[in-house]
Length: 159
Image (tube, rainbow, N blue to C red; front, side, top):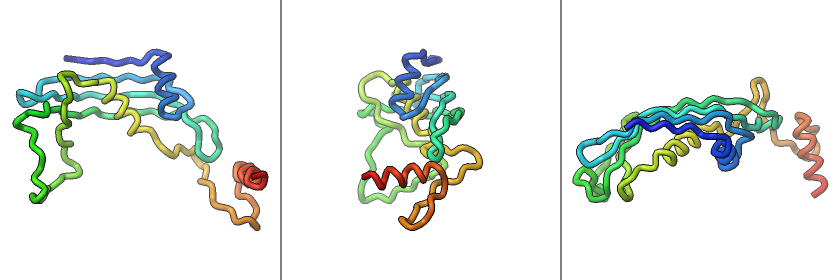
């Protein structure tokens, strides 16, 4: 079953607020939901977005694009394919391999929540304008490194 989620203005505003962004101009998830190994569900596709966030140094708005693949599998809790590992067994994990199937609670997959999770993980937590160096810590007797650091030092003195 193909699923397309295209966020309207209210949904984009809610995404921006929930993820501390200045704005979300576009959010689209195109996925295919299919059966997986008889009792499971596979979700594959992409999440694309255009966001504006504040530079962590200058606080100026920065535009970023998100284009992330969606690859997830879900199994019901009682599936024979899902077994909890024995704590005494050694477990080999391939960091480049596919993720283990998630437990499907109930009989529905919330594709919107999955798309938002992929979106959230793709957001740069420390966006910085090109050419701008990160703030350096300032000793009390040194001059501030840039105008924002000057403002921060002045605020510190007021406290």
